[in-house]
Length: 421
Image 1 (tube, helix red, strand yellow):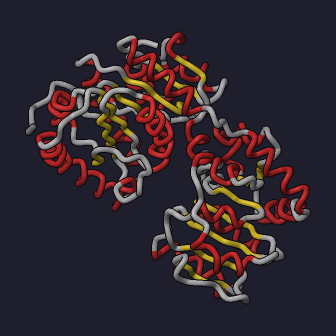
Image 2 (cartoon, rainbow, N blue to C red):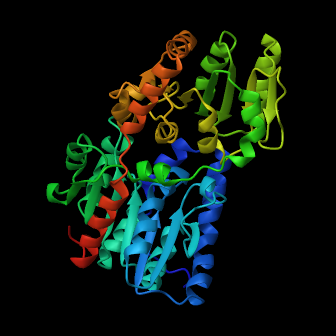
């Protein structure tokens, strides 16, 4: 499989979205990874005995990959055919993330020029897109070869760039060719219809990410030392935070009784330095921890975690969780993780426009806060363990344990019917 000139247009719309959402270093790594991916995929296909059932998951980054995992686990368990499953991605964050589902191969989505040959050599039975991250070049090639395509955990934010010109035009051309869309909530159904999906191809299944967090067994042994530090203290755990989130959390931490833990979304050296400098200026006793290596002492009031892949387990220590993303935009990070632990949740004002956050806000297990005072007030109202526990259970009740199973059922129908629901 080598470079073959391609009649399809370059995947301009997703590249536009990528340029606006990735910083320069991540974008450079993404472009470099995609350029070299064609040769790597070629070598893999040439040396692999492919199964009869071939599933291609295009999950652009870590979050989309987590949506696909419980679906792939159940699909592999239920099929009576030999299965070969691959995953492509475009974000460098997915390179080193330890996927729980054992894909036969994972790598960057190759550049458009080699996609056709890759598609012909692998010849997938089905392509799965978690969330709504459709790539025109991939969709077009699948359509040309008659490959069914399904969106799972499908939800589009109210003000998504996909609904705005000129991306909307390309989105409409893509979604009309989908075999099915698994919608997360009733509100998502008309949104997908407006984007151009045929109504009879939209099925309400719920969010497979809910199943993923409920299925997951936390590894708590490594947190023994942290548990001793937490003791009987009230703990505010701010997870997947951005700079705007952290400014409010740090201000609130100076007035909170108990402990505060901050787990930045991207714990870069610059982020850690900024948090440490703020603590030094304000005199807040802090520890930077590459958990579990660094253990805070008893005088530590604020723990700054500079490790990735540990957040979901750390929520087990929280009295209240603040999930980042809501103070600097409309996209809040995964609320399902603390909800699965039965932890009440705080989110920034941007959550009011986030469809994933909306279903939690309606449960009253999640509260919207606008500043440090709001964070402190909410924590104070949840000081009583019984009240806090009841709120956490309301957040957990939002999760749909059967979403992955419903999604697999729909995938089975698509495969049986050769591309239709």
